[in-house]
Image (cartoon, rainbow, N blue to C red; front, side):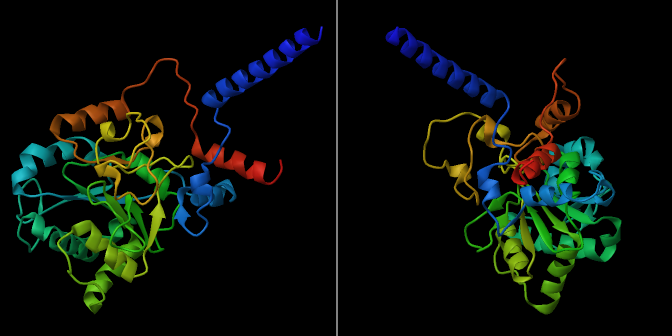
Length: 329
């Protein structure tokens, strides 16, 4: 009888482990990623959502409360091949949108006192933010910079921003780590400045605290943000998945065997994930999205729905459940 009981016990343990593995794959036990939980000294999505969930519902900002002014970095050569497709797709979802160029056109574009060329991208950024501060700062409380080959899901960005105070000096995007001690946000993935961050950027150039010291636009802007005490926000979701992306989805979503960081991830501030867990369900942006791809992503974002699928990822509910667990009930 003893061999039979041993066999039964082994079978019971094996069955339990198999069931646990199945349930874990369907309903993750880890409600909030440890990589997000353990970074206690940084402002990130988990802390933002945890703090918001602890307030009364009347104190929270609704997800659509963030007013976003989008400004698109473009030029005369790209208006037909790129910029018009932004205008006809995701650009419609911005509260206000400006197209920054070196030439005024009926598109319409804003003429900035700057020449075209990669060596002038930071000058164009400086002039664009100064122009926005002078003429449009009261039309929005958040200011998104995107390239004319970036795709943005404005509603997902609004959700992230609804947890934040635009009167604080905040700076969001895909965070890179070399050159600047606090990191900087990828220009191609798009970055967002709060109203206070915009004010400090302009002040930095007025006072000489910030300078045009480099032609690398995103890194140079990040240096000014650090100098002016603007705080970077970790925009990963509660599972540690990225929301802003400096490349198209195919650079991230393919599952890979363990390997050194590929070239397109070597600048990432946080340890990157490859495969299906690379990217948040509430993605904000992709870069290098051209013409036809803009319309494809718009269709997938706003129209494609699998019949009968019950959506399960609600970040606020995950954070609330995690709070209850931490409190012991």
